Amino acid sequence: MKKAQKPQPKKIKKLVRRPIRHLWLLLPLALIIWSLWPQPAEVRVLSLNPDLLDAGLVQDCPLLSRLTQYEFELKLPQKIWKGEEANLMLTLRAPEGSVRLSDQQLSACSLALETNLAADDLSVEPGNILIEPFVGNVSQVFLYALSLPAADSAAGDLWISAAVKPLAAASAQRLPLFSIPVVVSAAAIFGLPPALVRYLALLIMLIPLAVSFRRRLLGRE
Image 1 (cartoon, helix red, strand yellow):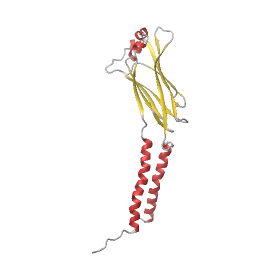
Image 2 (tube, rainbow, N blue to C red):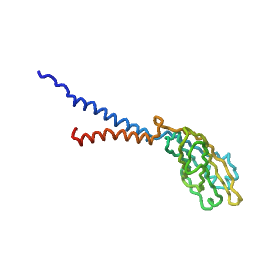
Image 3 (tube, rainbow, N blue to C red):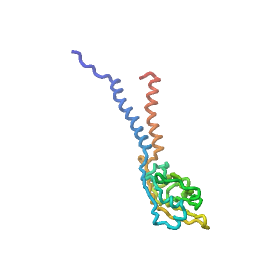
Image 4 (cartoon, rainbow, N blue to C red):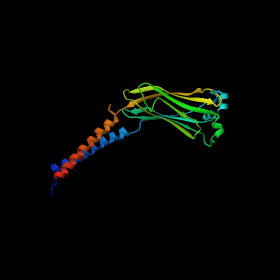
């Protein structure tokens, strides 16, 4: 009987080198996927209580009456990747099957919605205060871009109010609608921003590829 041949040292090196090479590629790839993974967000759905508003003002302003039927959906990030931005989005949605207001109803008063995001250590774009007219569209969106440039967390409040001005009134009346607490914290990978982690991971992945390419050029594999 022929004796089994022992593996040659060169073949052993190749067998050992392949799983190491695969591991060298998979670990940085996992870090890149981790750095791109979306952070958790909280969704809150709010609605106005008409009983808390001035009944006469609601009756005189069809736009305000229409607003009481809307659903306010707030998507609030709980964590933000360090050095990056996340969106805070407030969406107003009209009830299904609602009929658009007539021109006469729209001209009976003017109504503007204001959101004010007041939070220390939180960078807010395009600014803390957003003001948009409300004309009874099917949906309306208020969008903020948030980041934590120098802090690990931030806390504050999102104030939502309405400015109502009936046609015969001399000035607008301000109505507070909601006050929503906002708390966000920074997320990092081993204490590093995800952008830096992606850069380092790509650099690590390129090393075995460069070595393999060099070996092929030299005719060693």
